[in-house]
Length: 455
Length: 96
Picture 1: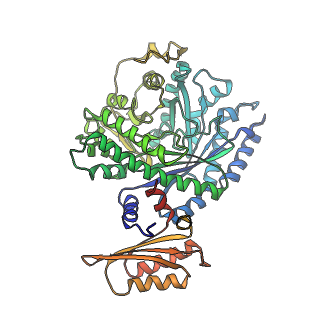
Picture 2: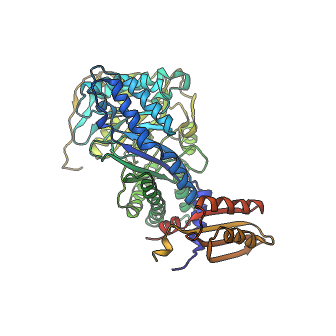
Picture 3: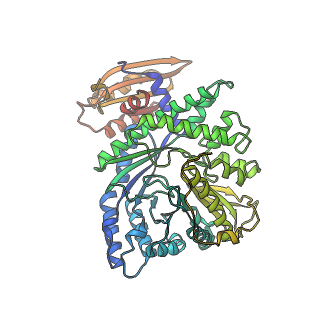
């Protein structure tokens, strides 16, 4: 074996230095099921102690790995058991208090987000679920690092329209209570269909019921690397060859993530969980999924052909990634958030990327309607209508879909919201003005779909 | 094969404008820190110097971090860009 392969070394350094290859997140997934108690203060104490015990070395170990391989680890995060369950045995529910405890623990160990302030309610809500959903706007307004996700639909259970209705109101209120920060509360709140239980990415990360006591899940990213690889090909490269190139790059990115994940897990002394290869963009120039569409030959994101380009990209990324690790999981694929992607922001601002086109794209992307700012006067019923549509796409197509929209208080079409950091900024997008009220208020569930006669 | 993948192997990549004494300065630091040099490749393209060095740190009594800091400092003093990484990242990324 050659000792030094200069091409490999230069390629790796280029991927990191020029094309923003990074480990997007190392997420400690932790069960809090043993923290239940009748007294909410005791629950809080148990939660705090357990998080500190398991996560105290998370950030320092991540820094060591960064040094070892000179690859940036952008975020250190924690995902916990859905808190609705952890707080449900209490005599008096106080989920806002539990959110504050989680926030304090997250700050203490130095992670920027903690996910799992949520519930799985695709078939119905328990008393704890109801109380938790009720508390979300207040919890998000009074904390900094909490992320909340609610699964309201699945291909097996159908869509819980009562929960969809409730979430429309919850998102609206979460934005209103954080009006001074452009409604950032809603940017940390997401509704899911078919939510994965091992996803390391926020805002949807949580530690599902079928998961072990703890695990380290890793999310890798690199839209810039994929774009550069496609740009290196001749313009008339056929789709088959282009897909192969994406697979090769996805393999390399995922392998790196697997190495980091396993080393990290060993250092902290917990099992390695999964690697999630998601092309997660950032607002930085060159780190954009929209940029990949342009490299493929589309004038901009939103052009006719964008859905096809995304379908191929999402599939090729999964195929390449799956070869590189025994345990690929989470959301693996391509994310299409608006505010977190410089190219998407530009396309939306220019008006060439519309809300409806984004909805179509979510039928083939890895998640859903993500980080889209909509007018502040959008009614809760309309938001429920948006959620219902998106959940239907996931339910029928047996895929994960999600909605993270921000009804930006006091903002209208043409204005913009600025969250800063990875959450970025976004123009307020135009949405359909027709009423969904009588539809979303019917109540009950949309039945689970038939799983045969696939046409 | 197994040995080549061990965590004791490091790759140092140095690049920048060519000048006298680059290799000497870096290798002096490595000798001081008991890092064994197993292979070196270098080239000069239009006055631009690039060197790759494979080292073994198993005999060193210093940690990877300390070695990295010392070599980086030497590189910075000469105005060179310098990358020091455990070799595993290349093995993992470029081999199936």
